[in-house]
Image (cartoon, rainbow, N blue to C red; front, side, top):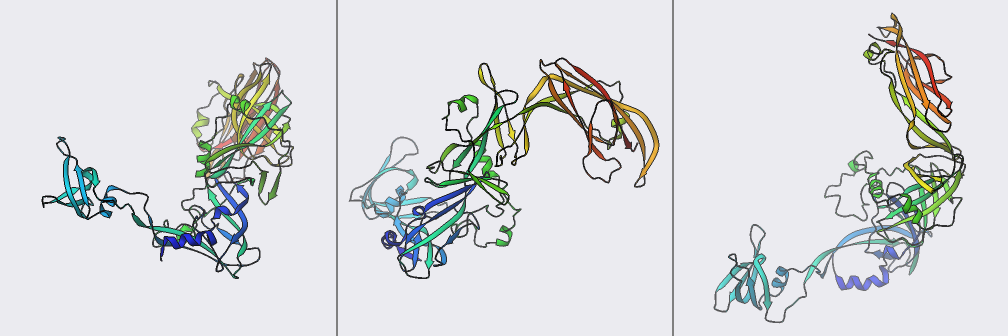
Length: 531
């Protein structure tokens, strides 16, 4: 299809409004860097058609046009070849356009002794096998000279030059075809785009041991399209756009090749890059240090987030104002009071019946193992909306003001659920453990034709609180075998169903330690071992 450019430009003002003239009503923003835009409005049509040449970057399988009155009959896209002015003009193009005119050409000398000057008429340009272009000049003295255009340093055109240089251009267009010949139609348009996503950033202020405040702000990165004052719906959930890994067929004519193996492209597990955009947005986040937050604007406190629920997703609804392409925004979503509960926790090294030497080498006289102890804060979501997974910056109030503590991940918490956040590892609480076998019965059990010894393990735990305040300490251990007895109250739970000779159990002790208090206790369990 070959058209003259002037005819296309004449049709443009009448029937070719671009997609950008449609008003964006709302956009749903996901944390994986993809967003669903919805636009609607009235368009001018002619000959039952509306045409646009600025095609959106819609992702595969998501471009959808609808007409509230049922007027839409089809959507058509094509590439036209048109002749247009070439904005990239090089020396070869200018010389080719002005062949037959008097020239003075200055050719760089290989010896560096000065330019070689040729004056004459440019007769033709040819290309050799290496794609190098040469200008043939008939000089004033009747000689014929050939020079490599790449070696021409500058040139003069003695006659009036012609700079009307054109080239064939590929112009994409997309048409909406309607059933009736109305001059105005109303449409709705939705499609998924990349490079528009959001990242949750939390700030947890601990005012004292029982009071705190949790704030959420959305950091939005828009590299997709200019957005006006639209409603934004920030999605809380795990998005699954299995096939939206490339552009829609309607808007991309050059990425699918001559043979489009759509059967292969429809494999959701092939080349899925759903989280790549999220990684790009995470790398663009601002530094979350306390001075940055303190110096940021202080919005009116919002104690509740507007939003809605749909299946497995919740959507925070915000209206932050205009957000142009290639811009960033941080916007408050909610703030809420919390009632934190502080405790310290550690995990004792687990047992391993799959390595019999572990038990044969263990002895109560072994050097005690020092276990890292971590300070956690736990609190309940008392709001009516979920808290999405995101980074959280923790600060604590003291006489000098808010002090930075740490940065961690706040896990997803549904309304009524409890979440915990790590503050830091503490050196002021020490936990050690030692264990060894105290009894053994050889060939005590046959399991799947294999004989096992029954080994009784006795372990000892030592905990001490060097802090100047009482603490709650939770100690856990995962073992393979059956728990027997303990000198300190515990809870035990079988972790999972198994067909192995030894079930897995989770042991947990919760103790209160006063300042300077130390506690020591012994517990035992039995395990079957194939020696």
